[in-house]
Length: 393
Image (cartoon, rainbow, N blue to C red; front, top):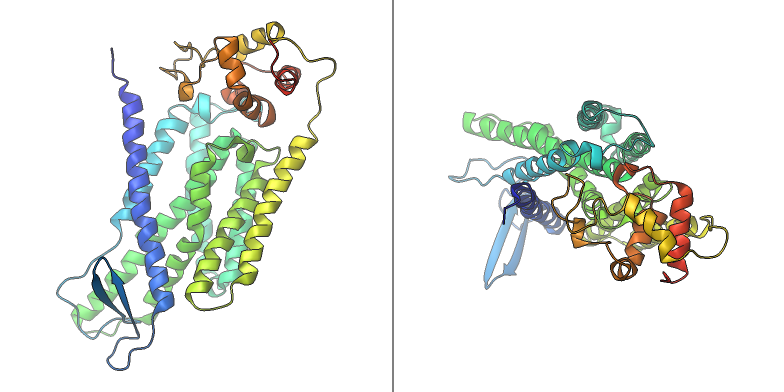
């Protein structure tokens, strides 16, 4: 029995991405929480302090708004969590969507792209996303976080709609997430850490650090804090085809992304002791709008004409469009084993998986991958009618 090294490599990189992502997000959320709970100390040069208890011990945190008067003997930096999260995430993007571009990234029904052209567009999107965002931060908009955030959101929405016209819906989603993740790690690599190093160098040299360095680093850190939940949603959206498989997936992404921003704002307002009822209401309304839109889309889908077909009539559709991957020994070289262990080689297996088939091949129409077998709308409607009728034998 052979060992599928590519699958084990995929698992290892995905596990690394998850682990380092938890570490990065955890430290980011903690430091924002810490900032929101600092109080002015009764004495000393610190600008804020906080006492906390955890794990059987007491902690006393102090913050110096620009820098302390002297460097401590040991200074802890938070950067490798961010770097390894991006490196592992980019590795997954390459392994799945670039190496497997013809299966996972390219959709001939949207655009006739070669593998190299699709990869080039994807890489360009990551680079252009950072350049646009960084330019916005350095522009006059940079002094107004709300205006900057609104314009950046509009840029991401345009990118989502544009990429959805070129890539598979799932590939477009993942690239928007990769754009945001690239911006977040670039904030750490190009702004936050270099600015902190300049402050440390000034202290060592006996110079007064520039307050603007710390202010810029804190602003980028705050931006990262608000972009975290939308990225996490995109990471898990792979498992929920009603999101990226909608007729306008960029709209669902926008609504659910804004839901994540609103939820993050609830926690930030609550941490600062400010009213957060409106932010909660906005989160609920945005989430309901997302669900309502997808439900409305599904409700207006045309029904197949005539009576429900039998399994004998459906079987050729499954054989042509599904069995190449979902069989005990897939003919598709991209899959050494049936994806998700789903085998569609008998009525019993198909009947048991009918809800999944409807979600992937009828409602969202993201299967077959890239519609490589050219499944028609009429075939999808007949398959849907059979499932709606209870998948009769």
